[in-house]
Image: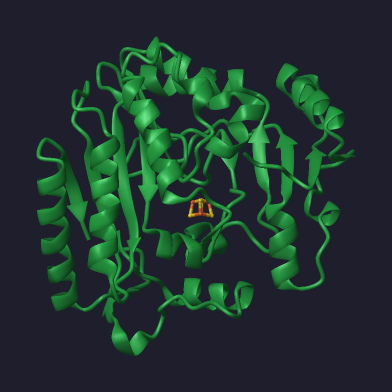
Length: 339
Ligand code: SF4
């Protein structure tokens, strides 16, 4: 659960019941609470250099209003992003948000959830009779702030009543107990991002360990939620095969034998762009992330910039390895892709 060092309320946030509720919660818990009369959030977050600005940004929760209710598209995994939260308390060195959220990457929650869900209703209506899929974690990990806002809980209940819509989100966190008793009707799909403890220790600072994520996924499986696992990013380090085998084995022991829907897996090998590498080296000057271009293959991307991926033969081995292991441990699961 996110324990912010400072909580900043944007102008107008207290005009909403959720804003009021958050104000009471954080005031009572003696957090540093800052009331802004403008929306100049960044000037209220300290920091002299990039690493300290990053650190302070990550420890800041901003409570604000989502003004634009025009949803971003979220291809190929969903039709639209559902803008509940932006930013994340985690400090994963490889996180794609490092290049997206500026020098002070604060976490922001939106208090006008009813307006956001009204906008979602319009998008659902426009695509009838097709089913519209909304992604709740496109620019965040929304789980560690949910014990405060209950926004995911409200969305799960909202989507349970929508026959022509589905909701999904992904997490590395475990604050899900308040979601277990909801009547979700199978309309919300939850994915856990998993990795070996070696990778979590080295690169996924401030996130839950693998056993805790597995435990949380077990609870959600028993509550009947459709579940998926993203094993990412996969790093090829000494012992990687033993450790990823161990991870999948532990997961298989915890999954109930009867599930409402088959599990699904996505596997993504580590990759980086030059822009991301430069940013990571500024924010984490001591990083040990493997980013030696000489050992990678350059792959041109569809958006005009390329990525450094593992060499082709290595990726072929990785695909064989994960296909075999997932099929062995989870004979009924589907593998969406291994890249
Ligand atoms: Fe980024 Fe996810 Fe790590 Fe948060 S948990 S820092 S969103 S990779």
